[in-house]
Image 1 (cartoon, one colour):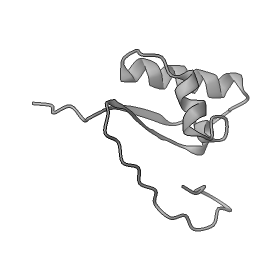
Image 2 (tube, helix red, strand yellow):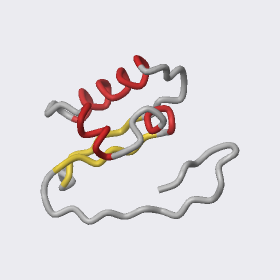
Image 3 (cartoon, rainbow, N blue to C red):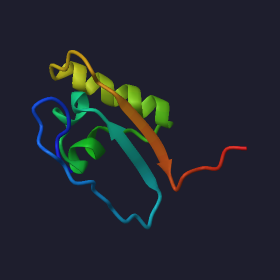
Image 4 (cartoon, one colour):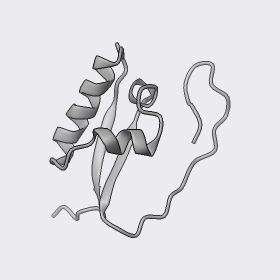
Length: 83
């Protein structure tokens, strides 16, 4: 995956195959700049509910110097059907 935004070059979309339960993290560079790899993200993620994990990841970026545009969405995988 590439970097997006002002001054960034074109990026190709990324794909990953997942066979076991986990979390999908969608985030802006406000988080990605401080946790740039899946291993970095995983090391900071608790087993809490998605909203809690998103707040925890945002707090990590803030502690490491993030100042604005820290956007984080955490979804359980496999995706849960909402009725």
